[in-house]
Image (cartoon, rainbow, N blue to C red):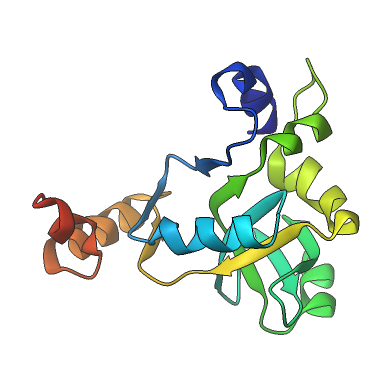
Length: 164
């Protein structure tokens, strides 16, 4: 994801934050509040997080929603020793264009694996807790769950746009 963003940098406005939203995520999150927090904190990155016992990531945060630790695809021993009820990466973030200076050019690079852990030291990485529906559509079962959520109104995206 980071290498792709670096390659698309010419399309971003110099001082305007941009949204990164993984293509397999369905959410009805209100991004206005997330953007407001991002700007107020002068964040390099604000990641949308939710709580889940088992996940591909772990995010530790302090009382100010500042990310204090970030692990992508931790092993089971690490998973048990870091956080009992961790926040996890939801696959959505708002980035300050200055973040792209941390991404090496011409090298495969991933935001959660390669960039996010390095940003902890800047104290400019924040979490924003999920305030709506979210589903990763990564299996036939999860696809069915997403369809059901759109159909029965658990995901407000369908209701707001008039589609289903």
